Length: 204
Image: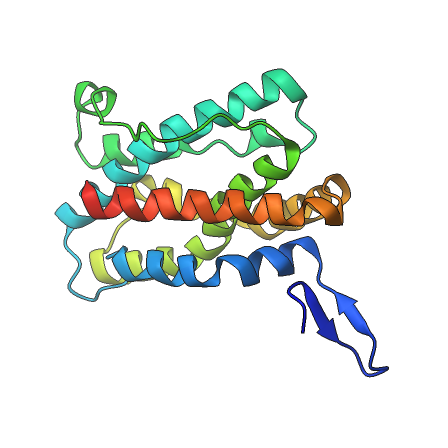
């Protein structure tokens, strides 16, 4: 079977949607990321949670800067301005008694490349919006294991009651904007962001 195809009852190949294609392409990277994120551990400590948020901030800051530059060049048909999350990470860290000075001094990943096309941008957003969708499971574990209140869970609360709607909006926008011929470009972009995040989390 060719990549990007499945079999329907008629026996004819049916093409995957863009997000189905991206899910298939990034499955190994997604599993690898899950293996290095400590937040589902029942013995998770508050210090580990704080350290993880600092790591995420150091990755999201340059990533969102790249997304902002993409918007300046190509416009915002993907509602990117509504999807920035570094302010949530900063709010959580402040609530966890990390000083504003230390937050400002957070080391940043220096390997994030400029985004040069809509297909690439969709790949980037697939990773971070997918993480926001999945964050609901992490949030429940954090409440259970660390007894945190909402002031320390802004990042993992995501869009709250609008999380699923935001995901569906992204899925629709992405499918409309990326032609099938550019699926591979989106897939390579998503895999690269996963690779960089994995490298960052392991090294930081």
